[in-house]
Amino acid sequence: MKAAIISEFGGPDIFKISDIDMPIINPDQLVIKVKTVGLNPIDWKQRKGNHKLILGSPFPIVLGYDVCGEIVEVGDEIKKFKKGDIVFGSLDNKYGGALAEFSVGHEKCFSFKPQNISDEEAAAFPMVSITVLQAFRDKSNLKAGQTVLINGASGGVGHIAMQIAKVMGFKIIAVASTLSKDFVEKYKPDLFIDYREQNLLKSDIKVDLFLDVACNYSFPNTKHLLNPNGLYLNLAFIDTLKKMPLFMLHQIFSKGKKGRGMLMKHSGADLDIIAQWIAENKLKVNIDKIFQLEQISEAHKYAQEGHNKGKNVIVISN
Ligand SMILES: NC(=O)c1ccc[n+]([C@@H]2O[C@H](COP(=O)([O-])OP(=O)(O)OC[C@H]3O[C@@H](n4cnc5c(N)ncnc54)[C@H](OP(=O)(O)O)[C@@H]3O)[C@@H](O)[C@H]2O)c1
Image (cartoon, rainbow, N blue to C red):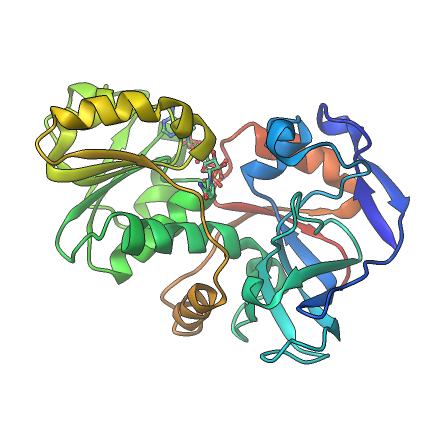
C-alpha cells in the first residue's frame, strides 16, 4: 500500500511516498481505509525526532494520528464497529501511522463520523477536541461562569477550545496575534488580547484556568493572573514534566493555585460526546489548508510555522 514514510528524523523534505506492507491486526484492533488525515504539531515534532528517546526509531516510520476512513477489517474482539462503517478518530500507535492508504487502531480510538461534516472536517477534530474536553472537564474541573484564558486561541486546539468553553458556559479570554484577531473574534470571546501589542503578564486580568496552548508561559510566571484555586495548564506535557519540581515548589506558596501539564487519553466515549456536539452544530472545525498526500512536505512546512487558523488536512483517497 502507498504511504508517506520517513527513514530518518529531520526536516519537512525527508518524506518519501513508498509502497509498504499492509498492516496486520490483533483481535482487538481494526483496519480503516484512510480518506483524510488531520495534521497536529505532534506530527512535525516527531518528524524532527523530538520524541525519539521515548518512542525509539522504528524506521520506516509512518506519521499521523488523526484520521477519517472506512472500516475494512475488524478483529474478533471488536464489538462497536463493523466493516463499511465510516469512522473518525486518533490512532493509538507509537507514531500514529495515518499517512497511508490503510491504518490500524483499537476500538477506543474511534467514533462514528457525524453525517453533517465532510471527511476533511472529520479528520481535523479528534486530537484537539478530545484534549480540550479532557482539559476542561477532567484536569481543571471548571464550572459554568468561571473564566478560562486560552493562550493560542487561533490554532487547532485554540479555536475548538473557544467553542467547547461556550458549550460548557465559561467566560473566555482569547490570546492570539493581530493577524488572527478577526478569525478569533468570530467565536465571540469576552476579551481578546493581542500578544504582540500587550504584555499579558502585566495585565490586571484574573482567570480560573490559564490554558497554555502556545506553551510559552509557565506556572511561576502566570500564577499572579490566577484566581484562588486557579490552575495553569500547559499542553506541552514533556516540557512540563521537566518543570514539575519547580511547579511543586511554587505550589507550596500559592494558596491553592496549581500548575500542571497534560497528555490527552484515547477515549471512544469522549469522542462520542464530541460527535454528538458536532451533530448538534455546537462545534465546527475551521479548515485552513487542504493538501494531497504528495504535498506532505509542503503541509508540514506550513503547519510548522505555527500560525494556521484552525487545522490543516491531508487527503489520502476519496
Ligand atoms: N498534551 C496534549 O495532549 C496535546 C494535544 C494536542 C495538542 N498539544 C500541543 O498543543 C500545542 C498547540 O497545538 P495546536 O494544534 O493548537 O497548534 P497550532 O494549530 O499550530 O496553533 C498554534 C497557535 O499558537 C498561536 N501562537 C503562536 N505564538 C504565540 C504566542 N507567542 N502567544 C500566543 N499564541 C501564539 C498561533 O496564533 P497566531 O497565529 O495568532 O500567532 C497559533 O494559532 C502544540 O504544542 C501541541 O503539540 C498537546
